[in-house]
Image (cartoon, rainbow, N blue to C red):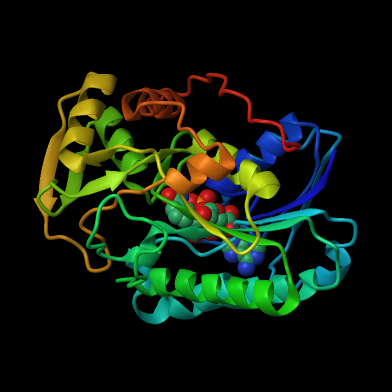
Length: 324
Ligand SMILES: NC(=O)c1ccc[n+]([C@@H]2O[C@H](COP(=O)([O-])OP(=O)(O)OC[C@H]3O[C@@H](n4cnc5c(N)ncnc54)[C@H](O)[C@@H]3O)[C@@H](O)[C@H]2O)c1
């Protein structure tokens, strides 16, 4: 049994990660400030699912203000997922929020981590660091050329992690998630919007011609890879975590029409600044070093997300053991 800290524990991926750790018998301290990026009620519902668990402790607070040194006392693994997400909203006046949550909060947590003997510090980075990659699938060695302010904050976050690894020997592992989906997906993300629109017979807005492709990652696979990174991740290394298939938005629309049984009312508008045209992860390193292996096809994972939107609850497969 390990003592783990999950920041952003009320969020989409963080709440699944916290549950995965509890299922394995670990003690979990979850921290979240319930930011208003999307409805805090959704986040409160995510953590409510864990409130009766004896090994679960939750603290509402902002990483920019909290006394992190005392909170880290006794913690062996940090999973740092708290961040202000979203590429489109990162332009303009809201950029300061991105700097606070994605850079300042991370730097405070790294600094505080120097005072404890951590086994691993796992940082949630993003495929957004690549921007419009020129090679597919994209390896971790590819150049970092973000095309959104959000992506730029993640690049800076990775640089900070490397600094603290090199200068202070913090055992840091960085993960670049590729578009994660599944139950509890953030309401601003494409699948959530598309499935809701399909089920409620509303117009579906598609940015660009629908030919843009993504490497979609099922949330439980992202969680399994994240937990594996805390055990087998090489300190200082970065890993792509992606579902392994490149699918266009037009193909996704066909799947959603099939799974919901609805005719979709699609309106196409211009592509948005900051959106990459294509993403595809080369996951060779994660497969070799973390034993990462996506468990579902996109169609299977989407069917679980559609079931969640319909209010049907289906058990998700349990995570691998934290001990290796
Ligand atoms: N969802 C994806 O497809 C995806 C892809 C790439 C990277 N990521 C990264 O994965 C992580 C989780 O993403 P998500 O989709 O679950 O987002 P999310 O918004 O659902 O979760 C992030 C959580 O962090 C909390 N938070 C933000 N700033 C905080 C602060 N200063 N102090 C305390 N709590 C704070 C928010 O309230 C939220 O609950 C983020 O770091 C994100 O950048 C996600």
